[in-house]
Length: 296
Image 1 (cartoon, rainbow, N blue to C red):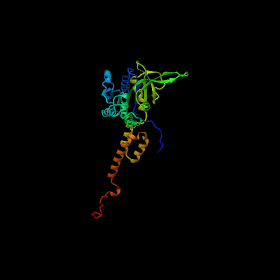
Image 2: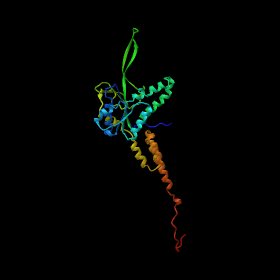
Image 3: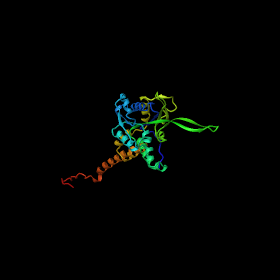
Image 4: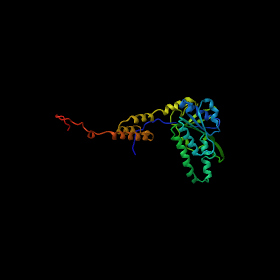
């Protein structure tokens, strides 16, 4: 356990878009993604919404990966890996609601196990693996989630019960929003959005706005600030001493999970080079010629 200086590293975005049906989640996600990549061919959308992504094919040549039932966490994870292996830069998961309450999703899995509280011990790790696949992805990941109106039954001062509307609630496991870089709530059919969570500080407590590619460019600028994995890789590959590698490890300590294999490989290369160097003692001195012409 060791204290270390706080430092900003380059990050991959984890963005959420929530809203009711028809509020523009898919369309807004595609514009966001294009602002991040500026290349439609580097965008992949995992489509669980009955091929609705194809309705926006006129925007550009983005990639679509249809995902049908059963909507198990493992099938979502495999879809994410497929996009990563295809060298995509942005993955849109449209939507994650099915992983929670769709056919084959976590709620149905729990019910099939018996619906008891203890049955969550078998379901929760599978759901967490899905979240980990999003959070640990090498790509920027955008998720959409359906919302529903949230109600509660409250008692008034005179003892009567009334229905209280609390706004829209995302249809996924509670707490997902806390894992995100930012979450945008689409609030009406005009695609107006507001930030309900924003670690970037770019959108929180700002007036409602329409998401477009410029929104993606702002977010990309934010995530590109700080230490770069590419820069760390270049310095490691050109490092010539073990001590230098130790220094680089401390310099990029915030990226240690990513650079550790690079450090180990370069260390092995340097040790191999060192083992091939002949010491001065091992060098055979040229035979000296005596004055009478014989060798000593």
